[in-house]
Length: 491
Image (cartoon, rainbow, N blue to C red):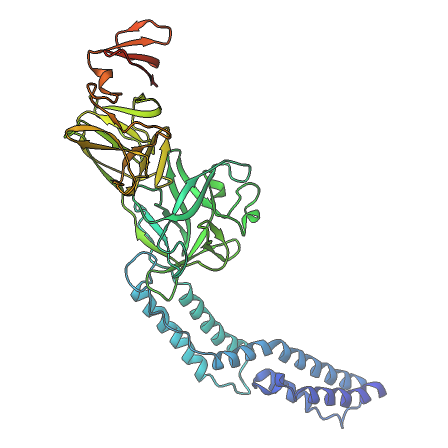
């Protein structure tokens, strides 16, 4: 008993000294009141070791209870001192990924009510940690609800352009585009993303946002192969391996990424978070899209289909490139241009209009075609033809289809006289050619690579030298009435 009799006052002194720090002085409550009562024990009438032991244990239990409860009291003090949550004033409305006005008001009212309850809360000697924690939790919950309110979801049947919105950035104003590339173990589909071009309906810049929950979305796009999803980066192995790398794509539904959309304090400006790392996706200086902090602001605009007007009735000839496959009229011929020899072009007859393939068109075709663009670049060169998806100044030395003095042909572009090639049209590059113009008139000094195929003044032979009644699939040798011959490949 002597030990307990000596230890009790020693313990009381230690706890009283401990009470001088902030732990005991910030707030008071029932737990501290219980501790004070335990410390005020009168041991003058104790006659047994058990009484001392009980008193010592009561002090220790009361001290432990207060220490366990202190986090609640500390949170209350912090909540009283905290700055008020600022009410959202941007991106309010009915637009995509904006805050719903009514929901925003209601959640902020709930926050204010919880904040007022905290500010008015007075801790007394009867206040318990549980009661304090309840008002703290209510405020915390109101803050979380307000900061994580669900933004207006986009329509599932619409597509959107994601446009870089970082002032001073080299790619500011450009839209994110889906680009095909080389396949690898890390990127089996071969698709990546960059922001190297301005918004253009011909290009594959249209994204589809599919809501998973709240502000979490799968982001996908359409290719000629079907639906492809954005992923966090390299898409082999587990998802956890994909953080902090270039955003890529996968057709594997199990590997599609989940991205969080967050509205900023600027109208129609948003951040998109890689949910694996809670870091934003951003546009690098070179235009590639990576998971990294910085340059992470984007705007969102509803995308539209490409609408291309085709009119070859006036001249009978034209050039064309479409960002999607299309059916041509049966009496219209389409050709690719694969090579030239002297003053002759070698053409390949095409059975159909393929996406992103430049063509020479013969025949009357008057139509406006609409579809989603699948272009990966503004310029697409196949053989000698380069098709463009935006008005482009023809390079010096190239050939542009024009009609001069009632003669339709590909005229060579001279320095200081460079015409504009319109969107969805093409020009010819015949490097090293001295020919001034490739005519579509058999009687002119140039060549007629198209009309000779359809008029009666040409003979057609196969590769073995046998004369044929019409063009056949494969290699054809076309001999004109003037004795000149050229090769035509029909696929």
